Length: 264
Ligand SMILES: [Cu+2]
Image 1 (cartoon, rainbow, N blue to C red):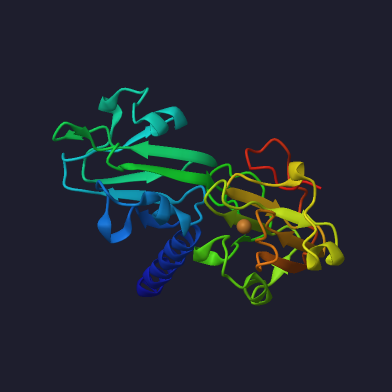
Image 2 (tube, helix red, strand yellow):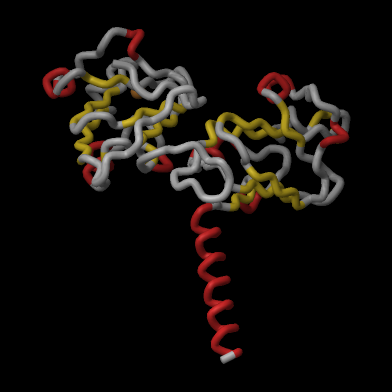
């Protein structure tokens, strides 16, 4: 009896642990390279989508560098507004992403007369997304899956996006995330199949241009094209067919700090 009960408790604990690991992901910043000068953190973040509740682990020789969350300005200029003594410096620093939006981290240390931040020890976590299934904490309601267009290749030339899209299942309410170096590409929704086929670019003000554009699928058929140069003719275009969500999802609440979801 006692054994049975303890087995059940162990089982429940295991299930709980699995549920937690499925809902939050832990990322080692820079993967095997860790937190160090000269690592391309932009490339590292590019292939990830971060959600509220995920953890970042900064690994480095203890005391050599540190980790300080800063505002965008501090990230751009490598000059923290907050006092550097708030920095983490254990060499194995874990930061939980607790709110949606952009997060900026830098090292405020200096080696051989040079700021490590200026040597590349800065990372921008672009647009942390609200968690899809509210677990612990007051996660705002959200629906649908997130799809990074082109997966780790992002939005660029020389990818067969139609093949990419054909291999996925889309539901109305899902979000597409277009990642690309700002200024190189953009994202338009073509008005119909003809405009899509003929690469008719809508008016410029309808473009999404942030380099991290998020579009919510709101209708069964959506056509996406890049309006830069002749990228559309070169194949930066795809068509998505989205099925109705099985049960009507709650309307997406306004006022959330997501990048504009749709321009029509
Ligand atoms: Cu393009």
